[in-house]
Length: 290
Image (cartoon, rainbow, N blue to C red):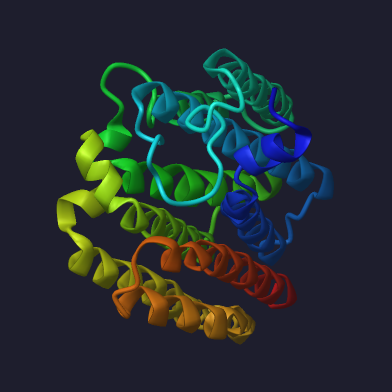
């Protein structure tokens, strides 16, 4: 029986900035449009966190029953380490999905029902990332999903449910946050290239190889800061996102220095903190510049 601490670790807290950051940026963009609604922002945050934790448990379950996590390097996996049964972890995943769905329906009821389509697509994407007979996460499409759902959908959806309109700064923020979220996944998969190769999990990092994956990580991080500079055309306050630059630089240096295995574990934390600091700076900048 897994302990509460193990369940918390299995939820992968270091990935939660990927859920919080897009809601912050989307809310900042809504404030820029004079459309900030605090309780809708909180509902959107609840949806994002529930889906992120749900997909983490779903990945733990799916990778665990396939044996992908048996010899991995990195934080605890509940099924792979046999501290929880596959059924328990699957139940935890669907419970989180259920919470996210309920909150999403409430949010849609207060804004626009067509958003249910985006919500349903997010749930399907969350499960089939590593679930089902042909998981797309095993076919080098994980980064595409992360960019779409934890970048475009999360940021633009958060903006729209509050302001009921969009602006190009929201799009720039969505692309930037999606890029950093992709970099976070690349760092994770870069670390796991040896074990993923053996188990047949063809992530983008496995397909590209370590050198090109390292270059892609650095490019995605750089793109986010370039977009913050471009957004300064709307308001110079978006340059507050540059507060994340020291964290990002440290993570990039580690990745491009040919670090492998356990040496890449701190990069996950650094990248997550980079995304969160970037989002705070950009959101505050957009709100001030409204």
